[in-house]
Image 1 (cartoon, rainbow, N blue to C red):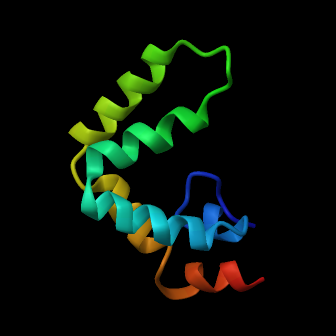
Image 2 (image 1 turned 180 degrees about the vertical axis):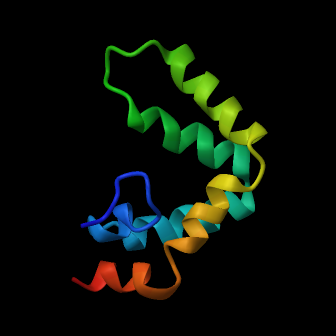
Length: 83
């Protein structure tokens, strides 16, 4: 069992390659990467302002998102991607 809010959730869902690519993109241009990635979280009827606000909140959170993504590449969590 993997918590949805934990760092192992997304690798456990078979998205390890996507996460690696995202980490690299965030490193290169954090704001642009988030502006591309975050709107995909919402359905087509969602207000676009919700995605913009979410991007701003993530940018203001500093490195917390990156730290979670980095955790997904280490230890037991990374092995979830292989199963």
